[in-house]
Image (cartoon, rainbow, N blue to C red):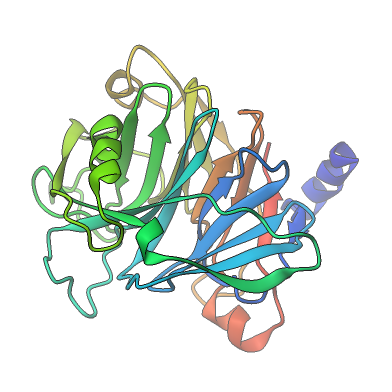
Length: 316
């Protein structure tokens, strides 16, 4: 069935969505995580300051909405996942460059850590819940060097690393010195600090994201999302156009200092935006570590002029 759909899609020059997500509150999907314990379920969040996470399944049905109590977001741009045999942790990344209003500490960004919630039963997915402030730990960090705009974060649960890749401005002059860098946080140290934290607002020291790669080999478009396969064997980077996969080699510094292993073309429907922006800002591996799923933000034109819902694509 999927093969037949793919052949038909090639004729139209773009891949039909696997499903559309029926929850209209999901209109800016900017991070995507596959549930480790609930087959076919995904978690996402909206871009910006919306302090909620959502669950939906691969049939597009809503499976939960949760308000993060007491959390005031600045610019949520990405969601990452850490898995173990007993639990799945979600990291909601407040790492964007929306400066209106400016951050209280301009050079400090935040990862908000919580246990993945239990998805609701089919038919009850629009019921709102609350994740209590005491169940959320905020990890502040700053970058080695100047502040960065970051929309791509992933966690290697095998090697206990958190990777971040900055987003270079589209209009940055080539001679400006603006580089796409890879930064790393020590996952073990972050988790130890989290275990000592007192929930939202708890006293956790500011970490430093150390520069791991100074200047990745450039990709054709801006980097908007990232994920690492559950077994740590590869990473995928989403751009506004296509996705690029990197097979692990020795360590992540070595891996991401080399050209990508393969390009994964992403031909999806147009957004209707006057400037033809694609808004592809979320990607994740499936539980099998091979399949790849993406969503995108809805354009303001779509939100204002159509009843469009967030699409979910399986691009591999």
